[in-house]
Length: 478
Ligand SMILES: NC(=O)c1ccc[n+]([C@@H]2O[C@H](COP(=O)([O-])OP(=O)(O)OC[C@H]3O[C@@H](n4cnc5c(N)ncnc54)[C@H](OP(=O)(O)O)[C@@H]3O)[C@@H](O)[C@H]2O)c1
Image (cartoon, rainbow, N blue to C red; front, side):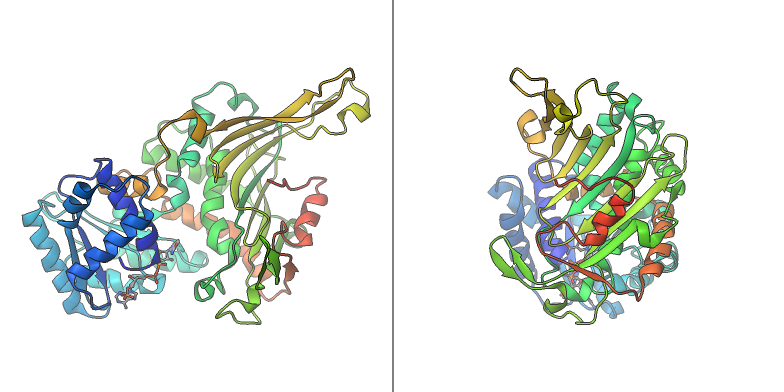
C-alpha cells in the first residue's frame, strides 16, 4: 500500500468512497510494505495522496474519520514474523472497529511477489475465514504472461483462496462508459437490431496513449502492448461489445456470456498479414523532442518488445460471422483515446451522383471510453445549399453534458464491489485463459522477428495501415 498504484488510485478512491458515505461503517485500512515507516508517517502519506488525487472535495471530518481507521505494518514479504504482526493488527481491528474477521487483501505488489505473499497469508492464518466471516484477495494484471504462466498463477491463488474469493481487477470494467456499453445495448430498442453481421461492416477497438513508457522500462520491456492491454482491457471490451444479452447482470450470467463469446474468437490465419507491431522512435510530440523507446531510461537497446500492436480477430458465431474486430493499442500515438467504433456497411444503393457523396464515409457508432466519455453517432447529412451534397456529421452524447454528477473513478466502484462481494465486473480465470489462448499464437509468431519503428504522434507503423488496406478498410483517426 505504498507503491504507485496505491498512491495514485487506491488511496484516493478509498477516501472518495468515504466521502460519498459508501464505505461500510466497520471499514479499516492496514498498509503493509518494507519501508520502515511509523503509523504517523503512513497516515501522512495517505493524506498526501488523498489531497492530490481525490475526485471529491476535501472534507476534514471525512479525513479524520478515515485516518482513525488506518494502521501500518512494516516488514518484508519473506519475513513470517511481519505477517504474524499483520495478523495481530487486523485481529485488533476486528475488536476495535468491528471488522468481524472480514478481510480483503489487495496485492498491490510486484506480480513476482504474489506466490510468497499468498503463502505467508496462508501460514499466518490470514486467508482462512471463520464463523461466517469472509476473506478475499484482489490481484492486478498482469495475470501471467501467457497461458501457461496464467495457469501457474491460478494454481498459486487457488491453493490459498477459493475461486469465489479471488477478485481479478481489470479497471476498465469499472469505468462508467464501459458499463454504459451494456446499458446502450440492452436498455434500448434502437441499436440491438443493427448489432450483427447484416448491418455491421467491422468493429475497431482502440486504446491509444500519447505518452511513452516513462520510467517503467523494467515493467514494460518483455511485456509490450499486446500483453499489457490487449490481453485484458481490449479483449474485455470486445467481449462486452460482442456478447449476447445476459439473463441478468448477476456475476454468473454476465461471465457466462463473456466466456461464450471469447470461446468463439479466432486469431488471424495469416498472422503477418493481419497483425502489426512497432516501437516508437525518437522525434517530436506536443512541440517537444521525445526519446525513442530504445533510448528510454533503463531500456535494453536491443529490445524487440512492441509499444504498438494491432490484431484482426474474428468471431465465429452466427451474429458476427464475417465481421472483423480490429484491436489496436499503442504508446506515443496521435492522441490519448480509448474507443469502440462499430462501423456499419454502406447503404446498398446511393441515389446521388458519386461526386455528391464523395465526402460520405461509413455510418458509425462510437463509444468513447476515455477521455471525454460518451457516445457519438456518425451519419451522412445534406450540406446547406442548392446542391444535393452529402457529407458526414456527428451526433453526440457526452456524460459531462447529460449528467450533473461526474463519473466515479473505476477504482471506487471496484473497491466497493470487493467489500460487498459483488463480482460481475471481475474477470474469471476462464476469461483470462481464453484471452491468452487467443494471443499466444500471435505472440509466439512475433517472437524474435524484426520490429518496425513509428513516428511519435503518428498512428503507428506502416504495417498497421497495410493490415487494414488488405481488407479494403482503414483505421479511424479519432
Ligand atoms: N502502477 C500502475 O498504474 C499499475 C497499473 C496496472 C497494474 N498495476 C499492478 O499493480 C501492482 C502494484 O503496482 P505498483 O506500480 O504500485 O508497484 P510498486 O510501485 O512497485 O509498489 C509495490 C509495493 O509493494 C511493496 N513491496 C515490494 N517488494 C516488497 C517486499 N519484498 N516486501 C514488502 N513489500 C514489498 C512496496 O513497498 P516497499 O518498497 O516499501 O517495500 C510497494 O508498496 C502490480 O501488480 C502491477 O502490475 C499497476
